[in-house]
Length: 231
Image (tube, rainbow, N blue to C red):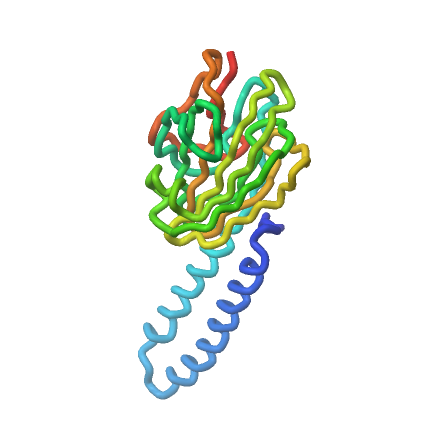
């Protein structure tokens, strides 16, 4: 059965599992020799089990499951898997001049880390900002951490300008954005990922008919969960 791994995981998705398998193989030969000399079996198998668990976790981290994207042009879908940590109204973000609703999503090391387009969009300006690597659970991390702002213009009415902010966390040290200015993305289409725990924010211009559909603490899935709906 094919394991759905993301191409955005390269080179880590190839190098890290290969290194773990090599370490398991070498240790097995060393430990097997040691067991003949009276080494306790727990010292033979426990490190092997730990390395195997790490291997499974690494492969799981880079998983990229197929999803049935909702066909609803009035919906803004979650751009990331994770937990909603904040829903706030902002108007002084230097990267997004509109009064906006900001929905923050924290991605733990156990979540799928693929980023997806919230709706059918044309990609606008993309701005990378170097920064720190603080805990991504905090809403303030979006202002001080390394991040990548992806402006997007809706292709359906209302033709609002949106922004998805990819934010590194304490463990995430690699932002991947495959989208380019001028690209057209379908709702739920993959455009990048964040590696090893991070945060994603969706900025939506304030309007009376844009209704938030989630609450703090909700679990969301990229390309599946509706965050905002135009009424």
